[in-house]
Image (cartoon, rainbow, N blue to C red):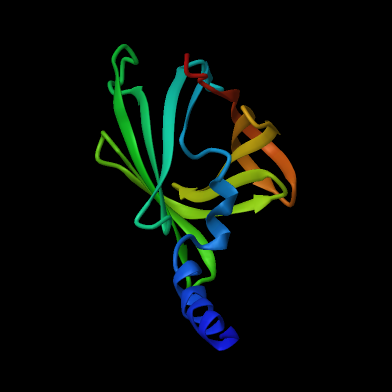
Length: 167
């Protein structure tokens, strides 16, 4: 009788491990919530964004849908970005692709430093970092700039993403 119970459990273990890559767990606190931030870029232009993040395809990818300014004059809000994050087995890293309404594509890598989530990507001749710095379960400091060896050399944007609580 013990063998009958043991065999089905052995068959279930591979099924249970097929879903989410453990590397994507860095997004767990962000998923199924809406995050909102407002601030100003270093040049004085406005930053306003609302992001909804979810797991899809059996939790093998993370999707981010961002509402923000959809015109250069920064007067209209709408769906601005659609992002995809996926663990890449070949490079053993999380890669991301961020498509924007202006026809642009930003791609790079994502990794964690503790509970902080760090995006790095090329922008022109520079390597830019976006950091979601964990404060608590519903607040992250958000910085964009030049981040090297654990230090900010230059910060272009410094604001907070705060979870929008449902009523």
